[in-house]
Image 1 (cartoon, each protein chain N blue to C red):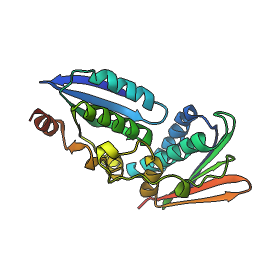
Image 2: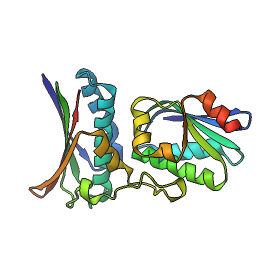
Image 3: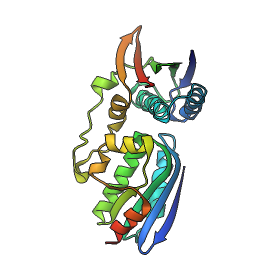
Image 4: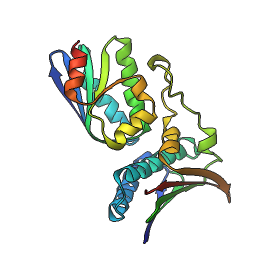
Length: 139
Length: 112
């Protein structure tokens, strides 16, 4: 059994409420465990937020394509955008999660959370677009 | 998302309900600052009804903890569960902010 969802949203932060709702509905229909639904929604939010902030286009001026495929064994997430080349897993700064409160930098946590919460995360540049693929296993 | 403030013997408890993400994190920050005001001796954030938080919301928690730390106001968190608890741990926040199992434990520690 598998089900999928494809969405095209403008690169605006406000557009993601609809994405979250659609993905949560898919997760309910596919009977995802709470940690799977959480990880997928968070991964989409963090990645899409990165595209809006670092993609190089004015907010609302370009589109982000989101595809979520749910099978018995995994939830697979794909995020594509036509912004400037940006590999979040290599180009985003790694936060220092050991630093004391006074020295802790604000931000940089999003990609770190995605790396840990998802089982696979990879990036490729293809046809002038950024492609991020992430997998959360269901067992 | 909603922040509700309650006072318990000089300790301010801010109960956070709902979801905090990039679309409402600025509102979250504003509501926390309003809840804490200028006179709290210690602050507990009760996250038992927090269903979801992403890095945008964690950023606000860190900012607020730093601001309160500069004013020598103690801050702790309580009642985290499930994926929300994992997210705080993965971020290493359990090393910089006291996290208690429940509100009773947080209030006992804050009152000392």
